Length: 97
Image (cartoon, rainbow, N blue to C red; front, side):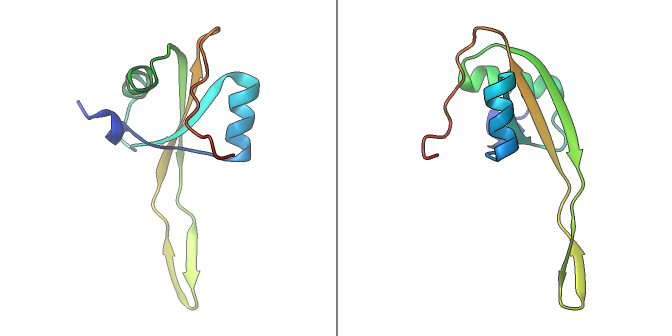
């Protein structure tokens, strides 16, 4: 089984992610492309000491990027929306905003 920090790469701190956090009690993370929903759930529960009710994942395709006449692609990655159970305290992983 992979470790916690290989399953969860980083939190996604965007306007859309903050909207999910406030309105739907949901956290958004970039996760390993091979991570399953169960592994993401266990990693969030043990890392933040909260109870998770549901996990949704989305595979994001890498965009094409150009440098003059040379073209390439950014790598594909996976996003996880982790919904916490009702009554759970929202973890504060950002304090600088």
